[in-house]
Image (spheres, helix red, strand yellow):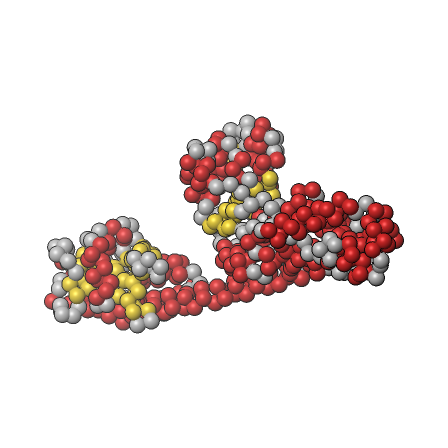
Length: 514
């Protein structure tokens, strides 16, 4: 004996209810619901359209049956679909194509099934229309369309529950993802791995953007001057991504000769290149502007098709790699000059991230200096600190080489200086000529312990510091040190300070005149 309509309803609804377990994958769950309606009932074609929360536009979320999308949608123009969606009422599309008939006010019992193209009901989520469930039919000819409508309304309620549950799952996953990133950040901070050092507002914004972009699949273009830390940020993005268990490969393109760049990057017939070595992980291409137009075309293929050809090989290989790039040039200008492909620029510029130069975040300089000093202390096994005036001079300095220049200076201090306390005078000794010229006018007198290499150096540094505090007037410096004018003159001649005093007075006059 064939099951009754009521029995078929219960059987189908029971199976559909179990599909709620698939709510973590909305597309799969909706496809299962439509498949059950096809297997258990007389539905041949069905479609679910849902509103995109970002755009507000209706789009197809799931369909079942040959030509389902065409059958259920082709009779609906855009304005008609929008009208049905906003009506929040069941509807019938007649074969005449005159437009949807809404229930109520139309009585479905007077409509013959053979004159109907499709029927549908709204999907309501959180008391607002969210989509439409449309089918060609539910039951056989002997059953009224009212029965179809009642059943569809029940299925729409279950679909709404699936959507609601999926939203909650997505929200929970987002929370877990953010917590996971926060835990990774804490782990990086506690480890010796590279991290973003700085507490300025502008660097907090950079970190916020990193946390947003890292877990995505988006390509990221890092922009900024040389030495700002683009490589460190690229590695941090990789560490915070889901690819962090795979390779992070860095390639400085400008350092590779042009005739070797293609094989180095894309491989050659007998071996893989750097892109393939990063399979499953991340490749960081620093100095992307160095790529020729022909290699830009090959990189574009990797981004679009996830495929590449090794140099000299006819075979196409599939690669799964996230591409991060960096440049200290304005790629827009290069596009305008015809030296950079516009289509590649669009692909790379999905998420541009600008890293500010050190001169725009001077409040981070003491933190960075402390960071590099602590690192050198661990590496060299001895302590070193900066006196207040030495620190002030470094804060005033513009650091044209940015963070890399600072790191090099601290390394040079540890290698060349024996002192545990770096004074202003000691600092001058280890600056490059360019650095010394740039900071000479900003340095302030330092009354801290001098950089001691010998008793003679100690005495000389004390005399120079006293002269600086006394505006390069010998008699005032002598009074401060408890010396007579003759004793001070002797020491000036002994240490050859005549030219230094002349320069100091000249710079002081220039400062006052300015």
